[in-house]
Length: 111
Image 1: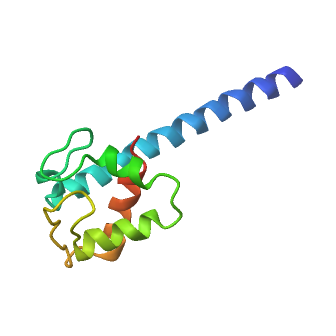
Image 2 (image 1 turned 120 degrees about the horizontal axis):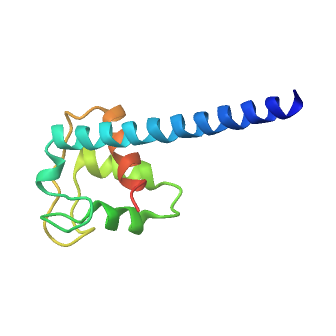
C-alpha cells in the first residue's frame, strides 16, 4: 500500500508539473497575442531585428537588472530614443499599465 501511495504522489506531481508548463505556454501565447493586437510585431520580432530590436536582444540587454520591467514599461508607454539607435520608439499611452507590464514581462522572459 505504501508503494502505491508513492506512485500516486509521483503521478500527481508529474501531472501538476505538466499543468504548470501548459499554463506558462498559454500565458506566453496570450502575451504574444497582446503584442500582435497592439501592433508591436510591426516593428519587433522575437528573434530578429526589424525596425526595432529583437525581443531576445532586449531581454539580454536587461538581464539581471532589478528595474528592467519598470524601465520597459516606461519605454512602451512613453516611447524612447537613443537606447537602440537614433530611430525613436513611439509612445503607446493608450496601452494600459497592466498590459504594458504583461508585455514587458513576456519580453524579459524570452531567451
